Image (cartoon, rainbow, N blue to C red):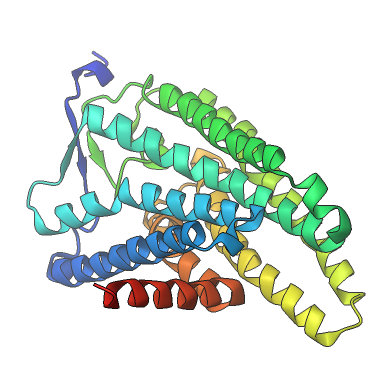
Length: 315
């Protein structure tokens, strides 16, 4: 008898930090503060870019999309992780696991493509400044954003369908913090070769290709920056791009390691650390890096702050 298949499972048990009982409250506090910082920082970026007309440019349009994405995909798993840290029952329904996986992979895929679109925007701005407004017009940057969201959606549909067609023979304990592809493939008792092939092949499109395009864009960007005679001009150009490059290295380094490799090389104990990096830490760092290293954002925040103070004092 093969055992129970996926249709018999009504829920999964998320093991998460079950082996760290004495640290549950401390971990809850850390995740809570991280989540609050993530929400506050990214909401602030969205509000500032909407409120200041000087920031109504392609670069900040993409940055607003990135901030919204960080809010969404952090919200798909961090609140549940916090609940499980304080609760004895650490379960998630089968349907809830499907929704969580779909949402998380959707937002992760969109962000992977969006970072490439942001790199292309910086390439045009720095390497072809005289043609920037013509090339990066409203139609093009809206099309790029739409392509990112569509690509992320299709990527998530494929992986979600392939993952939950697999049989889970009785064992419903997920040795992870949330429902994700690697732990579910390890948990399955069926043939996961198709899933591995899909991860590797689609990973080339959704992971490696955007990453290599970003690296190529920055090679051209750095080459152009080095030709700038003014030291002030070089400093400003490097400052604009450095923040984006930091996010790219953190995000792609951890996400490609997690998804684009054979299942035989999975080590869930180690992989959990990488999942924390790209799903919890990076979304919190995005607003910090972009605001601390971005003069336009800091000036816009000051201007918006003055407006709010003036309007509030008039009442």
